[in-house]
Length: 452
Ligand SMILES: *Cc1c(COP(=O)(O)O)cnc(C)c1O
Image (cartoon, rainbow, N blue to C red; front, side, top):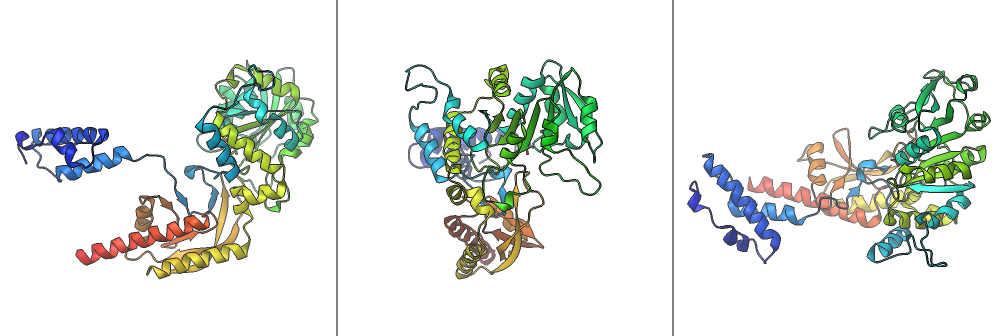
């Protein structure tokens, strides 16, 4: 087929793609156009035209953002969408997505209400704060806090030890600059004392910002000022605690700054994420003093940062679970994974290894460690069993790549040239799917081997 006349018409090629479909015509048109260009450039046809069109057709019909299986053992995995939602949160978001809702309708009075009314009282109750405001993520919450407390050229005092980059290019000094405030650095990288803050405070000071260093830790000769002491300086304190621990009765969260502690200390604004250790949807939560929240709420940036209704529905449902701490620990996936009992993990790993072996895949249960992820609890190593898979005839990296490209994508861990499936971040049902995907890829390899 190296003649333009030999290329079939778009219509004919489209009908060859199967049942009538609008996208079949689009796919056929694309494939034909590509082929014409190839012929005009004098390039020989590399592949079968129908095959080419089928590939385009499949690509056009399949979504880009899809469910994936997380066998990496990183619980709050930003690349994999952070926190899986609790069933109650999924149901709340689905119900609101399907039809209309009372998002901003005041059902008592019949007029316009605020979307904040659905979570405000819950957040006050759970955090002990006077007031609360939610926006679309914690980065936005920090920017709004800085802009509303010190925008227009006032100063924000920050310890040099906290001028960190959180990830995804969120750098504290740049955020402060973008807010219209001026950064006033105090202390040294490793040590900042209360006196450093005291000396920096003057009539230009809009706020003191304390930023949790998240996935970054300094060891050795270090000193930081506790939030209680900062709040005693008589200047509004913005406390960006990042993940923030709200769950009760979870010793594993001990290293994370608690939301209630910062509120009780008297921070003007405490900022934290909805989809990290809270285990809810993407959201940025501000809790704090009535006056500070009122300033944030009426700042022009609050509107462009507004939370959408699906996230809001999921956030409300998640926060409702926190009212019953035991239920929260059982039903919020992130919390459940953080404290999954050894025995349960062991049974899960045994079942996965057995399922793989039954399919002829060489697999065994080994010891491993999982991480919280999302910049939270960076030093935490959650010990437990994992399933080690012999990747041969593939190299481990190649098996991992094939599994990433499977349907659904399966993401796992590489360790010492082997492939590890962490069961902590898989549900039982997902684990059955994961075994099938691994077995399928291995069978394909055996087939390729046999035919080649
Ligand atoms: C993660 C994090 C943020 C950003 O939160 P997002 O919800 O991802 O926008 C801000 N500050 C700290 C300390 C964080 O850990």
